[in-house]
Amino acid sequence: AARSLFLKEGMDRVTIRAICARVGITSPSLYFYFRDKREIVKDRLEAALRAAYTGGDHTALLLIDLDGFKDVNDSQGHQAGDIVLRQVAVRLRDRLDDVATVARLGGDEFAVVLSRLRSVDDAVRVAASLHDLLRDPFDSPGGAVSLGGIIGIALAPDHGADPYALLRRADLAMYRAK
Image (cartoon, rainbow, N blue to C red; front, side, top):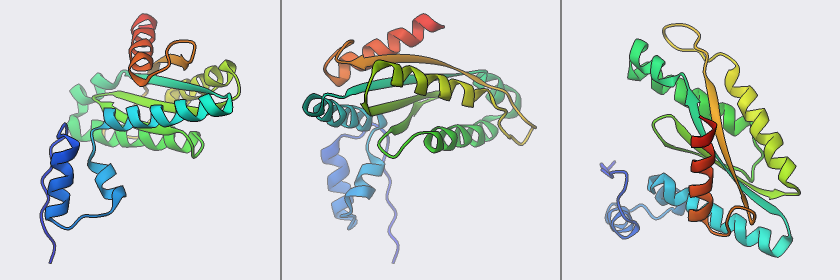
């Protein structure tokens, strides 16, 4: 028999694990699915930073704020906005390799963790590619919509050596780009 599971975003790990255990969810991937998105980004950044430290590679965090998304929600409603957000997520995921992490942080903001970069220029090339990708029209119930994106980039170790420093620097870079 199927069981109902009610989890709220922002619940701490201990609470989520207890709820999952109570209803018989033992798969780490299911637990991972319910975790807070910022926590996932932080964990992925920590893993990428460890790998970069041992392998001599670079790690980058890209924060993307969609341009024009508010107009979609205001003119076509939140359901249309959700459809467009799913398309954005799919495009970002499809453009990136398997080692990149894409997460919607909330609203119209996405995070991308890039690891195993050989140079700083690699992060800039990826950001430019994602910026171009966001310019292509998206399908919505009200017709094609055009968006854009503002991207803030933070690089390790140049802009920080821990996830919180990179999140702050990428957020600041995005704010300055606006």
